[in-house]
Length: 455
Ligand SMILES: Nc1ncnc2c1ncn2[C@@H]1O[C@H](COP(=O)(O)OP(=O)(O)OP(=O)(O)O)[C@@H](O)[C@H]1O
Ligand SMILES: CC(=O)N[C@@H]1[C@@H](O)[C@@H](O)[C@@H](CO)O[C@@H]1O
Image (cartoon, rainbow, N blue to C red; front, side, top):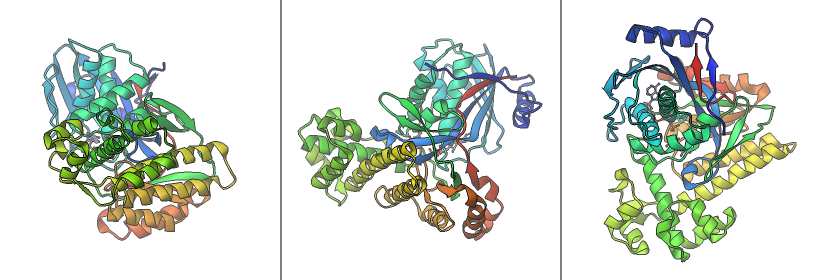
């Protein structure tokens, strides 16, 4: 099994690492021992289906989190961020408390730190002095939080002389990010560790597996940020969707005579019933009604009290939710899982019209996210429309949604005109956005995964 690579970095040549080193020396009065990096990602297709057990198709991006580190025997954790928005933090490394109510940035570091220490049963952890530097826009669907969690786990692993494989780190980080409350799948952590420069990946779960996906050569993927931010851990939007999927799985399982308490994910129910994804969409039509379900109705179907439902199916921040939309969420998940398989097949078979087919799959994915999963927002929908009008073959929201970025597939020879048009039509119309086009609208290539660097 492959481990995270350890390479060399020259702070004279790489000016960003040079600046991080300067900040480290200014903060702690010495040089860092090493640097760790973990990348953000853009998901090309397969939204909100990883936590239902289905495969997704992301690629890592160049933007990342880099942490400069020095370890010691002080028993303290000290964190400094190069971005003044994120304040300094210090605590006893043997007494870590993660605040779910108010997800201040250092809590994401603590998720990775605590996850690694528990996983490796480290009883006397090394003290850490760190400088954190991130270039992934936050709450924009490009996985800034997971990059920080993964990087913190990597820092802790290296400092404590542990050696986990990329796969083990991915699984571990997918679980430890849940300390902060969001019940995500494992896409972000898997691609952050398993990415290889130059290729997108099909990520499959249970067991975790990544397969290279060769994208058409005549297209470029362009990311555009709607600049609407939503923090997943600070709101219940994300977990409500996770819970709706769980409840729909359990109701389908119960109606079909399965032991419903043993099921939490659509993929497991589909497998137990021996259905294709198309058949699963028909089962949804047969069993679930389109109107929202009240909590009382769900309890009645599953024959449980509200307290029991809280135990079997809800998360801490969804206990007070009164209605659940099950039909549309389930239809989205099964059809989106199908689109991922079609996307991968098209990349493999390379038909003459491959990029048109892929573009249409991306458009259908956005429509489903917008209308069935309801995880978009007006500005993001407007941006996706502008991208399609500006020459994209396909465009869709990427990441958790409710704001953040769109990813567009653009013919390689039209990237300049695409960027000009989106600049005018989306960013140019808003004085707040005009100045920030370069950091919010950019072409991207599949980037590499997490690494440790020594000088
Ligand atoms: N450079 C950074 N330094 C410190 N904390 C950061 C940094 N980048 C992101 N974060 C933390 O991650 C939070 C954003 O997490 P959130 O889950 O909302 O978005 P995301 O991971 O970028 O999006 P998505 O999961 O949709 O891809 C920020 O509010 C901040 O607390
Ligand atoms: C860390 C986390 O919760 N990540 C989730 C990811 O797992 C996936 O569900 C995505 C939507 O497709 O939304 C977030 O990025």
